[in-house]
Image 1 (cartoon, rainbow, N blue to C red):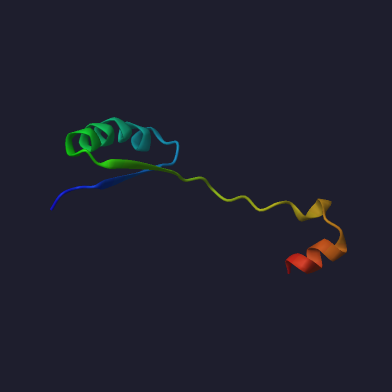
Image 2: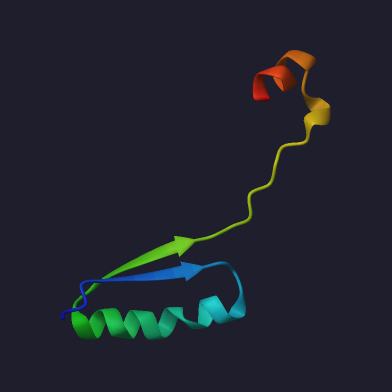
Length: 59
């Protein structure tokens, strides 16, 4: 089976960043596409700055 696409999830951690160099080498060796996925935590917007109508619309 030929590798055609390599997905590298990156979350800013040292371990994830260390995986990038070997993934690049593997992609080059297999003439594969390298896809980088940057994962971040979702943060909810504070509700204190919203009007009551906006809060109701979110609910």
